[in-house]
Image 1: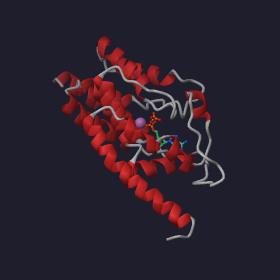
Image 2: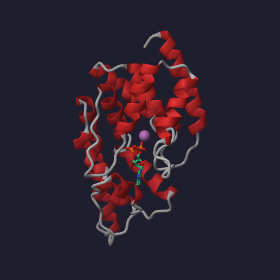
Image 3: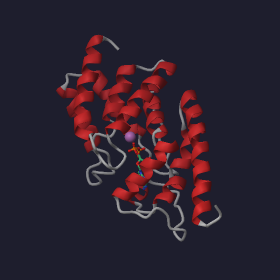
Image 4: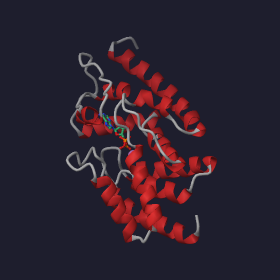
Length: 219
Ligand code: ADP
Ligand code: NI
């Protein structure tokens, strides 16, 4: 990144940090910061444009559909407004808006292809933060924020074939593992993303075996 780009990233980081400090659903500043850091590591390995990845990571959840279900375009509009405020060039704004539209998970049966290497890096980084030890913590923080049970053995997972039924599902949090988290390792774009995902996935499987063992009184 050149010094001008670095200055923009610093200013937008500061603003996003103050907007998302203390958020309680697992979409807080620290999620954004982890996605930002990991996106830049993946970008380095993939020769992706770090400025686009940095903007995409910082702005990807600025108005997430989960918190604005009646206004699905708000995420991209708010991201655009933030970039205009800090005088990001028009070409970069377009790339970041497209990236933000591509990266989100939309259901087990819905393909979410990315059209640039930058979107590939940010999508992998965002998904890596949804799995492993932190992913488990985030899933229960989110489920708790929506008042959902940890688990209900009578309610089986649903592999959604369209975004609308995925986003409107209100099932318990263990189902979310089958509907999303356990599927992510096979949806990675980058070699390094896949390597990290395999490790985090293995830990989630261990954790789940233990969870069911304790639930059923086997350990
Ligand atoms: P995406 O845009 O791919 O949905 P986010 O960065 O917005 O990714 O974060 C998604 C995270 O939100 C999930 O990994 C999980 O932690 C949480 N989440 C979303 N839906 C659910 C759900 N139904 N139950 C539990 N956690 C959920
Ligand atoms: Ni995210």
